[in-house]
Length: 153
Length: 259
Image (cartoon, rainbow over all chains, first blue to last red; front, side, top):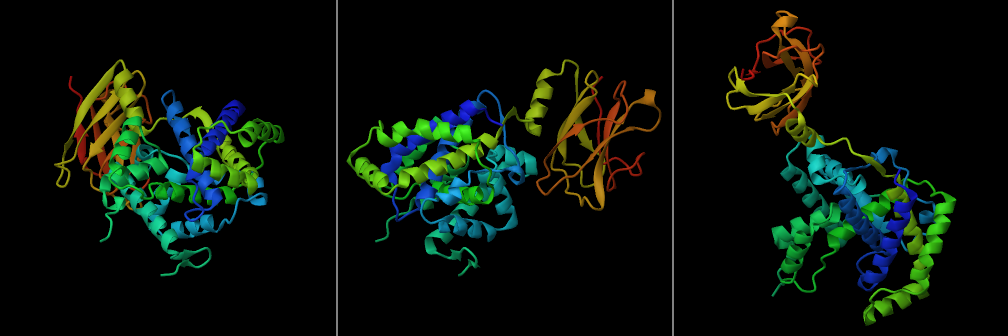
């Protein structure tokens, strides 16, 4: 487990960053929760990159993650449909794209690490990530996927 | 006339994907900023939001409360940001902040941040087991008695396979690296590694089995089943899945250390 001190530092950084970029929030483009998660992710990725200069960091497999505070459900920020639709969109991708995206987004593995873990070329990892993210973006934008129905087009 | 989309620029898309998933170096950030200046007003955060939405989804599925004391402390520490933001906010930022505060969104944002912090807390600080590539490079750089040999194809279909084997007698372990290795069906045949050591008898020593996928590139740790005195040769055969005690087929690749 990461030390409490690091968690506190990370939270402070995220709050600060959120204040800095709050003006960029556009309710027409994303729910508040997605916006906050986006900012938090970026800040945590930056932290990880800083720490990685000293030592590589391990990420717990997603199956073992017990991620959040129930407060997310109780105090949820706006609609969670977007997250559900993103999850549904992820489920429509080719299995290899899903696998690589899950390792990257959920486990935080670097592209290089994914390539070596799955024994596939780095270029293939990047292609899966690019196509996967672009496809999910497209589906979210066009409303081509719904929470329970999968791709509707 | 349709405006050109930044998503038609492959390098921009590549950098945006990198940023959304693993971050950018300072040089890449600068490059992206420069490239994006040709596409003013376009939504450069779209892919970041996709990753954000995916993260929210996974946060919803996997829950465990933060320790109460930590949660309280984090909320307490966050108060200055909520009541007295010190960020360099412009007019539009101030409008947003006012709206956010009025909507009660801040408290919910704090909950989300705490959720992400819980995720962060679940990450291990222990140094990773280095990747195979990193292990290979470290082994090559740090083994004081490094023995190295190049693989040579022995049969049809393996003539173009390239690579080398690294071995340390002190460490009693090594690595092999191969490029262009034909893919195997792991349920039928697997590649098996052997080390020839005449002091150990006529039969080579089993040192592991492995598979090759369609990329043909592999790095495999070598861990012999018995101590090796002097490795006279390394060989790879194709054997039934799971490997065999003594080779049942001819080597497809052999590497002989220079003496």
